Amino acid sequence: MDGKIARSAFSEWGMENTPVVRKCIPLTGPQKAFIVPGSCFECYTKPQGEERLKTCGGCHLVQFCSKDCQKKNWSTHKYFCRAAKAQSEPGRDIYSTANKKIEKGKKWFNIVKETSQLLQGILGFKFEHIDGILLSAPRVCNFCWNSESSTLKLCEDCCAVYYCSGAHFEADAAVHKSLCRSLKLMVKCDELLATKGYPDLLSMPFPSKSVTKYEKLPKGILDLINIPSNPIDAISSDWLSYPLSILYALEKIGLGIDSSPVHEAKKLTIHMMDCANELHIFHNSLIWEYLFHRLPNLKSLRVVMIDPELFHELGYTDSNHFQMSLCEDCEQRGRKLAVSVEENLRIYKWSDRYVRPDVILTHGIKNQTTGNMFIHTAEPSIPMVMMNVIRECIETDLQFLSMHEDIKLKLPIQVNPFCGQRPIRSCIYTSQYTTSSSCSYVDPKTSFVYGNGYICAMQRDIKAGYHRIRMTPNK
Ligand SMILES: [Zn+2]
Ligand SMILES: [Zn+2]
Ligand SMILES: [Zn+2]
Ligand SMILES: [Zn+2]
Ligand SMILES: [Zn+2]
Image 1 (cartoon, rainbow, N blue to C red):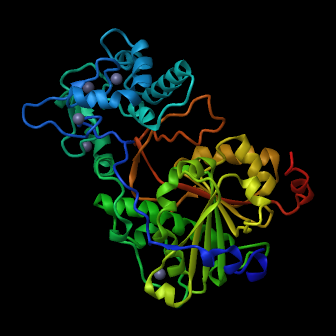
Image 2: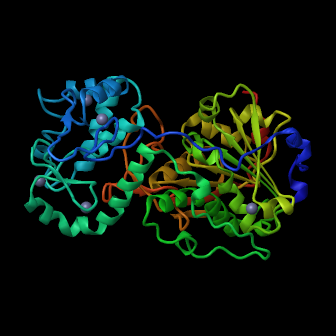
Image 3: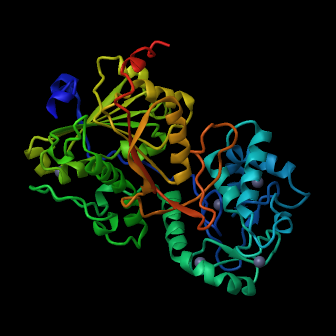
């Protein structure tokens, strides 16, 4: 492995001068990106006793506990609210006629999708994430899709879906029964993230023992963690899914041109592309330390996150990297973990900071620019692992990539046995403004999805001449 990394020594990377940071930099504060049914859209308070939430007079889709909360929320809600109001009958919500349009809810999914595209078309820009969720999870009866009913009541068990009557609750029971438990966990997780923010990773049940002899991964993530029943376990499984999925893919396909076994690697460099939504991963070394704990030979691990959005979100003006502290055992073994953020793959590629990756990880080729960037910079021997919450996104991206390059699929698209176990509310918020579908995730049957739910791994085909890549970087 050693010879294959251009800048192999850790010290050459300038890391010895970098302050060692705390094991995990906590993500502070609540995340305003969730809907907790039956609670205020702004402060998540639930009405007590005789109290009732007030419905937004504009869009009729959200509820508030008070005028104050509505005011506070207005700056972010107003664009969506006005657009939705303009498309609704006076005094009603945008879905009020939906139940008349559809037969027995068969095309509910399409109505949400059309509505989402219509509103974004009117606005002329892409929704905020929360607006996509609003449309995907409105207050409608889960059986007849009626949104006008004043008798809508939440399922008392999951508090995730509404019914207009006891009869409709009964009528849907057979379908809902199989989903109620997961939906309940989903709402609990959303509520925790919305009101308290991400839990401190150090308090999470991460497997933390280092092995002395390599053990192959078990069949799936549920062999390593208990079936999550509380939100902290579930959120933790989302994070654990990253190192485990990388390991899973690398166990199958090996490293480098000669597909050498991953457990023999002493150094490992991972490039993560387009991971702006994965800020929590950047902040938490425990996630990556888990790779050390499973790979006894591993001495040095670098994670380079390449994403302009992430770069700017963190307020960086120059390339930044952190050396992260590890557990006592890892420190004694002289292990080193470094995480850095880069704005642009092409600039990074030609900089002296560049460290050749052993594996590239991505959630998808968001747009053509990113796709081209990958095509022009990835060397044929470097495997790329692609994970996404829905299969179709991976399929679309693979199609795009193979139009431009010879792609060899080393690990076919499959359900990821090491996906996260937190049910994530599925959502539509992509429109014509992005080329690929990778921003929208929806399962019309369950209304939730799992993080990193699908996985595949590919390489650029070695037969595709290297010169093709070399020709293009200055363009
Ligand atoms: Zn409130
Ligand atoms: Zn509104
Ligand atoms: Zn109903
Ligand atoms: Zn339920
Ligand atoms: Zn450790």
